[in-house]
Structures are given as structure tokens and as C-alpha cells.
Length: 374
Image 1: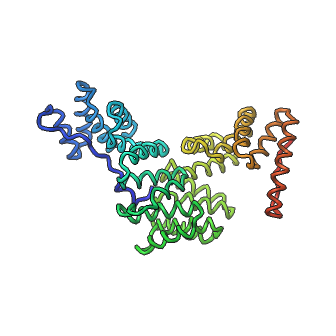
Image 2: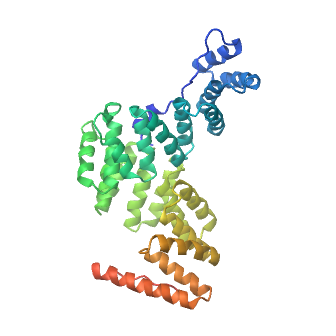
Image 3: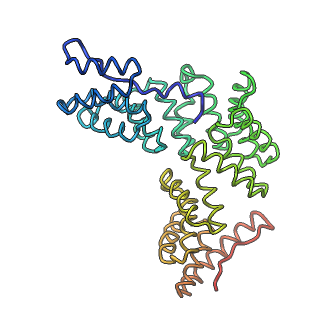
């Protein structure tokens, strides 16, 4: 996560006990406001045993639990509170923050979106929603949220970073460069170097990208995605060992980084380290259930582990959804041949031949892909 957004992540109590409320509730709120979260949790829980319907108190308990890092428990309390008060935007915002903290970014984005619809002028919510959309790969949505007058007022550097990143990853490099320059006006920074490195990688300047990304990590070893993009750059230059190390370092910083889970899972799959690879790929799939790359990696691994029917089912879905996905057709053909379905395998070979011919017509010299029909 961009360090420029850290100030947005604040779990706040939602209910202040007036004088006429019971002493134990006023005491719990006082402890909460004084930072005694353990004491507040215990007192809130005691009060809720007698008053389980008190949704505002449940929201406070959730906030106190979140401060202690007990996010799953906090989420349960927010869910209970929202069951009674579904339009309570503050409770839903705290729920979104808790989901974000444990890495359920897609779920966090859904909750932030609900708050954003209710409070479209809440700029911090807009920023957090945009950051979630960026992380799940919806770059156009991030741009739509941030590329509007007045949004930068809440945190100009954070907006420049998120918007610049989304523009570059949406292959709008020139516009993204404008925001890189805006960040660099404030001095050299890890965020600016990450943006520069990403832009150079997309322009196939892998040496320049590697240098900028390494500089970014030197300035801030904990910067989200810096190690991941360094790993991608190293993959492009054939440094497989360096790439694996970079992806592992990214996952030490952020276990929920999609690209690091996907790429490291794919590398481990190629090394036939299937158990570890499956954990990482399933983590990536949980973050982006419709991602073709993750689904292909899992299907290919099923085939390699001789779960041929499972591989066939997923590959048939993939080739229907993405008809030009040559490697999926190649692997599906292999699955058909192993199942002794020669006619189906031959049909896939013909599809592969046509796709390769079309590719070679556009890019002469590209090596065609073909199935293992043994």
C-alpha cells in the first residue's frame, strides 16, 4: 500500500455515550478514547451480553478490536451492527478498512464503493476505493475516480501516485509521466522511482527499469509493489533466480500482492514444486477470480499432476472465453490426447495452427506453439 495513504486508515469509534447511559458503557467509551483498547474491548463485550441489540456499541467494539489487530473479530461485529443499521456509512467504512487490512481487497472495494455512493464527496473514501481498484487491476475505474477536479485537494501526492500508476499501467505513458514529474518536484522518492521503473518496463527498457526499481527499493524497502515489478523486469531479462527472490521479498511485505503470488506460483510450478505453487496460485485466484493467467496456471498444474479431467474442464472454459489464448489451446490439446480423444486433440491442433499463422503474419519470425501429442 502506498505510504501516502496511511493517514486514511483510521478505525474510529462511532458511538459516544451520553451522561444518561450506564456507567459501564461510558467507562468503555472513555477507555477507548484514551487508547486503552484492551480494557474497552472487555467492557464493551460485557455490556453487549446484556444489550446485544446495541448496534452502535458493536461498531465501537469492532473499532477497538481492529486497533488491536483482531480484524476477523472486528468484521463480525461490524456485520452484526450493519444487519441492524445497513445505512450506517461509518460502520461500513470501518468494515471496509478491516477487510483491506487482512488483504481481502475485492471485498474492501465493494464496501468502499457502497460508502462512496452514499458519500461521493468524501475524498478519503474516494482515495481508498481508487487504491483498491488499482490493486485489483481495474485501472480505468481508478482513473475515472481520480481524474476529476478537486480530488487532489485531500492528498495531492497520493492522487498523483495512484493516478500516475493507473495511467501507466493502462498504457497511457505520456499522461502518466505528467504525474511522475509532479511527484519528483517534491524531491526524489521511492514512489516516483517505482512509477519511472514501471513506465520503462512497459516501454521494454528493462535495464533502465531495473535501475529505477532497485533505487526505489533502496529508498523504501517496504514500498508496496516495488519488489514485484523488479521481479517482472528480471523475468524479462532471464534472471529467474533474481525474479524469484524479488517476488518472495514482495510477499514478505505484502502477502496479498497479486502479481507476486501469480508469478512466484508459476515459477514454482515450472520447478514442479506443486504444493507451494498451489497455495500461491489459489491466493492469487481469491484476489482475482476471473484472471485468465491464474486459471491457466492452475489448469496446467492439474494436467502436470495427472488430474487430466479437471484440467480439461477448466481449459475448455478458458479457450471459450479467450479464443486467442494459444497456450491454453496447446495445453487443452495435450489433455485431449492423454484422454485418448484424438479427434478433439486434432481439432485443437488446427485452431493452434490458425492462431500461429495469424501471429506470424503480424510478427514474422515468432516461434509457433504446439501441443505434446504423445
